[in-house]
Image (cartoon, rainbow, N blue to C red; front, side):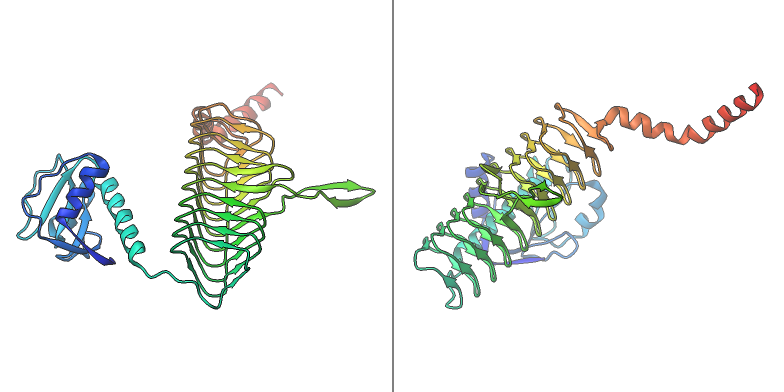
Length: 349
């Protein structure tokens, strides 16, 4: 159960749904107010919940929630003092409402700059910014309005962060990196560390200077302990609305286009281009200097050694998911095939 600082009522919910989603809901009583969201089993009369799957019909019928978002196909009457709102996508609308509620709480929360933070005099700090204790902000850094910086985060010289961002504790943002608006960066992430570049000379590995940067556009989320390397020359680019999970490695000079999703433990070698709305499942490894085209899906633990046109892929090396399924399905017959071949070889001998 998540309890919010601000209460909301049915009138507010109706107004928000009408304005933001364009759907008018029929609510006869608007004087009810709510303080929390919850699953169906833990809910009380001040809770908002959703019901969408028949697997949870028993929980739905037993729930004491004050407001439940339900699909239009349901045929059930509410309990006394309970409101059922019929909508097309209960889960989507519920999560949207949670996001809006979190924004309200964040707007109402007190913002301050801790005296224990170390901020260079040349840094430009916007309005309504929250900077926690032991943050380090170096020379020439810019931070936009309504952004929150968590404890022990370090932002190095010349980096810029947009408005309404959330940077959790223990993040390191190296020099000259640029982060857009409404970005979320989780704890332990490192943005702009040197790309992994060396040249052998007389048996010795000579470091290649990494003099580029990292640019992260608007509405990007970066998971905990993810590393995005700065480019050798130019920019490592994460474009608008890309979503990057925990423990992801993005090599120097790579590019991740709009709306793409990189799940946990994905690794991109340098100069890899991930197109729009690409989905890389967990532990996918992608070789460098190649492109994965828009709207492509690559299954978990796949290895990608070459560029991929739009489609679905799986395996190592990654091939068409359709072909890979046939190969995997055939493996169960392999022992009997081997026995048959050995038998034929003996008979021929």
